[in-house]
Length: 486
Image (cartoon, rainbow, N blue to C red; front, side, top):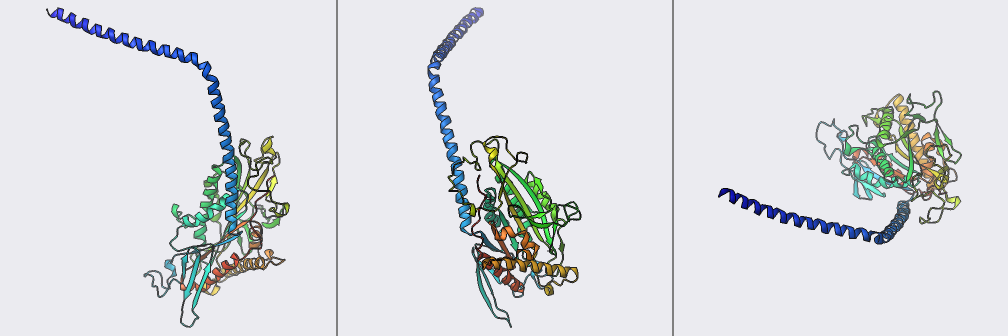
């Protein structure tokens, strides 16, 4: 009886499996028939697919062309926006009160009656200097600049206003950022950052290097080479800080300022190191900084005794792999405006690449394009100081004298440019001779005036602010111009 029951259950399950198998078989046959039908229809649909692919390809080409035209328009509008502020712009940064600002030894809290803040940022464009001292006339003066940074504003805020100049650099403009002010006013902090190298406190030089290489990586359609040099003007002599001995690139030969065939000023001999990354460039600059002249004074424990000039030279040409965008090609769309007349072009900003030169492209349309050379100069000037206040003697006194004379020469140059004199005394100082292209050429110059907020520095603060106000009035050089396309 049990056996019959088992057989019955087996038959029932077998029938169920057979029915499921037949249904699965029917589904497979239907799928095969559908696939065969689609295969027969494919030759008829293939022309339609090809037509659609061709349409998409043409749309992609149109969009790519529109994208590159918009990039050219963006460059034009960007540089027009920068130029609206003039070829020379002046910013001011007021540093916070520091422990050494107290008349005491800094071991006690700061007393506002001893060291009150006399220089304040009224708004983003105005500095107010206000104080009243017994036996002295009261001071109540305002100074206006393109941008004013209060003591609480971080390094990122300062770099945000410098960053657009990097785009102009890659578009072919020379750029110079120059920090000036009295000893201890925060110039080196602004340009280089603190000795601790805290990531959030790094200065304009490392930030500019990082930003430059980031912009280069974002546009692979251009072949770009970067070189860096680091020099100092110390006691009115030029020293190459990247040379092996930290003095001259060629033993026994002093670096001097010469004029190139294109009319540009160039220091020679000078070590120019090719760099491929921001880290490599920053490491070279840091190595050069170790050799910079620096001494302690009564005003500042690590006073810079030389003018530091970091120059980053960018050579740009169309990449041989780029066919979509050739901004230097004769056949490139001129959507960015009509070409500049020959008389208005910047002197010697570009030269034709020789077939064997680095970065020269192989034969083809891009091979006939010109290389464009633009330089970024980042300058940390030595601080002006009064020998009686700084307490220097001997060789340090000579350093102070040379620093003050070179800063006076810089003021004379700006005054001559402001008055539109026929002769501008660039050669009165090695500093102004080195910076001649930035001061009186077609470069975009940003002057960063650094000042102390304290009462005991009010005379030097007024001097620095007055210098910045005069520099802001200089318009003799006209708007900055980039190198011509060929």
